[in-house]
Length: 408
Image 1 (cartoon, rainbow, N blue to C red):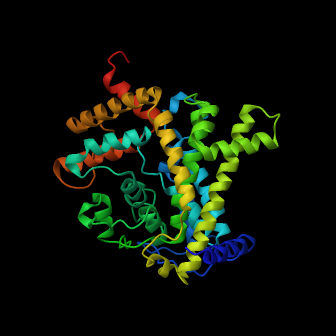
Image 2 (cartoon, one colour; image 1 turned 45 degrees about the vertical axis):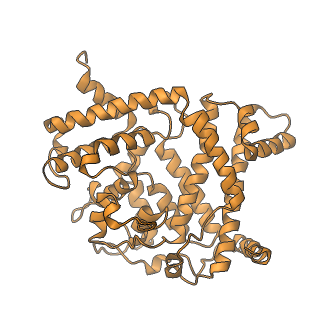
Image 3 (cartoon, one colour; image 1 turned 90 degrees about the vertical axis):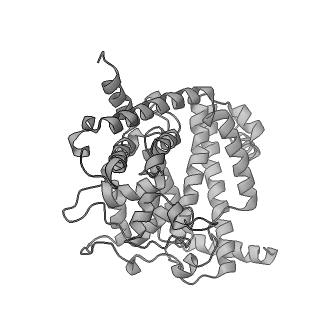
């Protein structure tokens, strides 16, 4: 993009930062929501997106996130991120970015809170195991499982299953990483849960989502990249000096912290470095996105969806820094031998639970012995999968012990 356009984008970004109370024309307007699948009276005290957020916060699946982990198993320490703390951090970052950009911060926050509801126990390891176990029955995908949680598995209301969220919230949950039908992917290639749902409630999965969903997706990146640094250092999986030497972005920021506060201890140095890194990522996202918006000139959320390209993004330089950081974390943290041991243990627990419940579904709790989607064995498998996916780490460990340890 030309320097002039970048300059205009930066000036626009500055204006947006100081106009915190205004809503841009291309923001999602809660007063013009496409509504809910099941009609309900509107709330007298909350707009539709605030109401969606509150329903998610009160959901059982949201509470269970406190016992589901990102990298470490729950019992390994009280200070590591769980899916709950991560979701709250994503929601805070998404809200801050949306407010700077003149978007609907309630919707952005709502999507940050909701985005991980479908994750099973034991992080991405749990997802890989359930996907392999369900390969004959339609597979498992955490994003599709989030949709199942929000539209089927939460059962609190007298006239419908799920939380009956607005179209915009469900669209943002399903499409926050972009259109699902693109690059040769067809509807029949998508997870069964998404295929089934959009057959009755069209979420326009061929288009980009609104900007609030795009913001929430990048807020997820900001949160987990920077907070995995914190957790990895706390766990002793790598040292601050290794991080400084191998990840230039972190090294530069840490040097600035030490220059500004030469006497502080390492714990405070880490905290201040991560705080500044989050700010750097947010500033880069807002600036690059404002440049893109200035070039695309959307005048409505419909034009955002039809843009054919993401309008919220990091700069090329930040993407390069992110790639370096992710390679470091992959080598030093996600594939660390201690993490590998936990991952191996988690694989055995979930695989053995799935196989046992599939062979002997009468062992399931009474509430899980009926229902499910599909027919025959597929129906039973999906019910078993839903049950296991909803477990916390500790509950999965205890359930395995109850079923496989004869001494208990």
